[in-house]
Figure 1 (tube, one colour):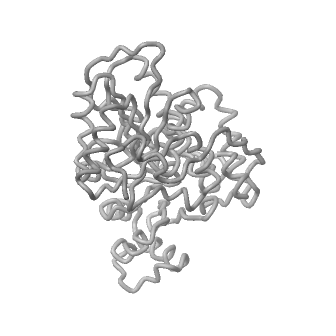
Figure 2 (tube, rainbow, N blue to C red):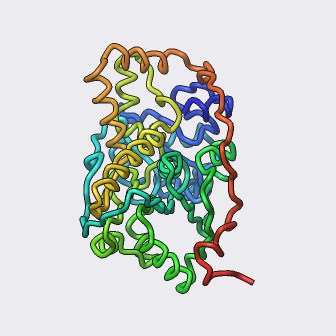
Length: 360
């Protein structure tokens, strides 16, 4: 997080997220605080439905804040999640455990010389960071991107993209093509670890049944990174690093110490979840037992806060107080690590891993 913040010249901005300011914390009519992340055009197009105002100026931050102030927080969160918007309340409780085993399958005994194959089907930061940590541990990591929806961070933050995707092979798949989807599933069956961050509906659309694959492929470790949980209604809620940190209680904890409501760090739920996913995935891989593990970004944020306070409450309180009282201050300067490996072009290794999909 320090590398990303210092590389981008990020500043601590209180109720506006660091970087491009794509997420905002706004007071509601009933005294709550509503987090709304707008990083896609489609999210803005849904704002009139969220507020019941067809004439809302969806490009005007002040108009959006005024609309938030006319509604109760719980209603906005409920409606926003039904619409597929990344939203949160500063007063909610995580809807799922931080880590849960969703399915188990047969055991696989791997020789000590075996180099695990990791397929990274995720995007943005949390999942790719987990893949990066697996690569640092010596594993073979393949980043799989969609022809129609490549990883957004490649465009929005190329420095971070390079850092967490260096050394990974890159495969490009047209997920609207049945032949290419079948080839991807065949590749999954050869893998040791799969990382993905899709909602259940998206996986079903791809014809991917994660639980069935785990029950069928010996030793397969499947990491499902979610905003708020991998089962029930929460599995369909959209979550981004900043609003998931709010849902995990970080902003309310900071406000209790400083009197200021704001974001803690920069999309902090992402790096917390990426590190946790790598830890849990490595333990599962070493066990040899096939399993699908669900990871909730909001619940992991809450878990991290609780664990830190158990170990050193004074230190975590001081850290939160610093974030709350330094509005406008730059992120701590952290020197970026030099790249240690090549960053492969999109689709550069498709022919190697999916030779049947070589395009003319």
